[in-house]
Amino acid sequence: QVQLVASGGGLVQPGGSLKLSCEASKSFFSINAMAWYRQAPGKERELVARITSSGSTNYADSVKGRFTISRDNAKNTVWLQMNSLKLEDTAVYYCNVVGRIVGDIIRTYWGQGTQVTVSS
Image 1 (cartoon, rainbow, N blue to C red):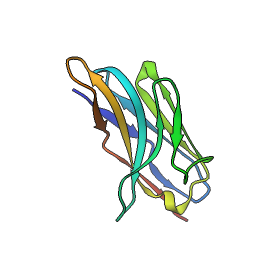
Image 2: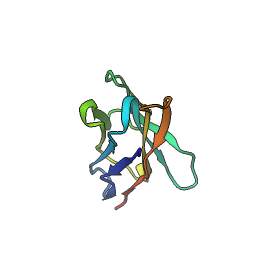
Image 3: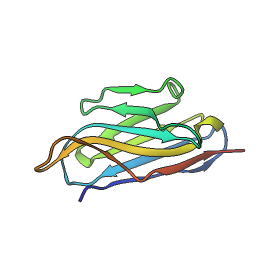
Image 4: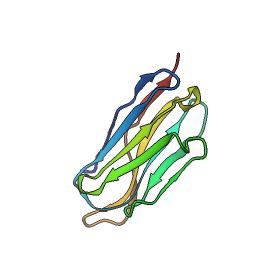
């Protein structure tokens, strides 16, 4: 069974930090890219950061210099270190994995979402 378990969300003051983590189940035979998306109330889901299996990264312009994505291929885990958080970072953050489980084709999988609230 494929599972993406995200954690680390919470309430933080502006300027604070949080670190999100997402562990993908061992069902995956291979994982290509891992990413974090977010969706704020009334807005569309948007890409926050993405990292490939080789370690290449890309970030939304709004988080460049503040957020860092990293991954451990052996543990099927991706993290998102969020620093200097702003009010506009408030959203539900979703883990995203593009990969393949045994006997299947490459698919996109989503985690359950974790709430990040930045408020004074």
